[in-house]
Image (cartoon, helix red, strand yellow):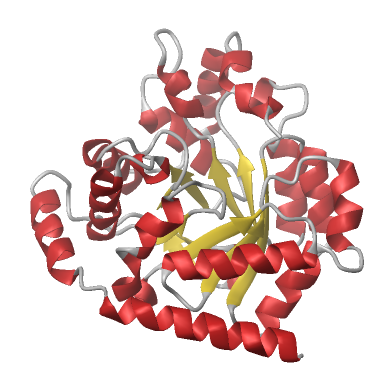
Length: 323
């Protein structure tokens, strides 16, 4: 297809810029600084379903309460990405509409490209709009490929037919995968689990990014019992987001800390990884320490955590109203 061949050439040319970015020495210095405060043991890894890819159980989120999504915090954002690399994080999550997130990552990640798993997203529901987002994402990220490209925040039943119909965004996924611009496809959502489950039944996605935390189990329409069984049936890799509910789970009288929040989510059957944003390097280091020490929780411990969130679930699932 001539149009897509032109796109491929454009993307390859744009990626050539990545070779001019030299940040190895900066990351080396960051590694030396981080090693003094974080144990050197590796994080546990899991294989992401049918992808066959093994990755650490913690990835870096590129939006939310993080300098990565703030136009005024480039220095802090770059330091965060460099620290993540030094700490052994290989899964980096961003999106076309995460403000400067892609641009910041594109200043650091290119020289580490073969060691990382880079995921971005498009909120477009049509083929042409999705292609436009992909071209812009790759240019910002200074790369010619993504390991994972996802349909972003799919929230309503009425979105599914346009996505999977003629001229829908799924067509762009297929074309990009055929041209090896992307390796895997995904769907994300934090609104309605039934919609994500339906998407997984209608299309052979490789991965899904969904809201999972210790309070969501009390929501009238919880994600875990609806989406996880479908994902397991199709061997879809599952990444969890909203794990600490933007820190609200750590209010007095709820959870003690990230050990419980991350431990609960990663102990759910069928979950392979969680992405958590960090406000600064110190917070990222603390999150990595928790991931390094992770051990699956017993059912009794899971039940105790659920009891702690039973009376505060609405405050911790506020994002379920976003579209």
